[in-house]
Image 1 (cartoon, rainbow, N blue to C red):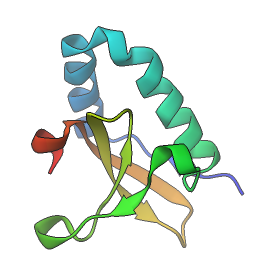
Image 2: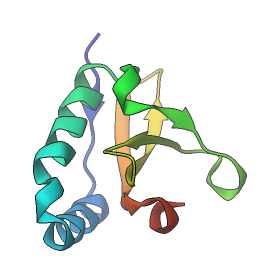
Image 3: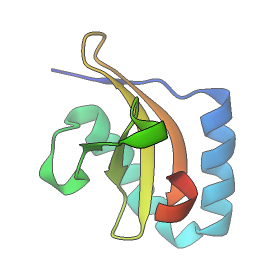
Image 4: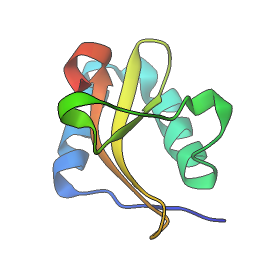
Length: 91
C-alpha cells in the first residue's frame, strides 16, 4: 500500500522555517517523510494519536526531540503534515 503525502502551503512554510533553524536535521527530516509515505506504521516513526485539543491529529518522531504532527486519513490513504518542531512547539 502506498500512501500519499499532501504538503500544504502552510506546512511547507513551517518546514522551511524549521530546516533553517535546524539544518543539521535535514537528512533525518527527509528520511522521516520518505518512510512516512512508504509505511506510516513503521516502528521507528512511533506514530501515535494525540489527545485533548489535538485529538484529530497524529504525530511521528524525527528523533527523540523533534516531531511532525499530521492528519492521518486511512480511508483516503493520505497523510497531511500539519506542523514540525520540538515537542513543546508542536503540541
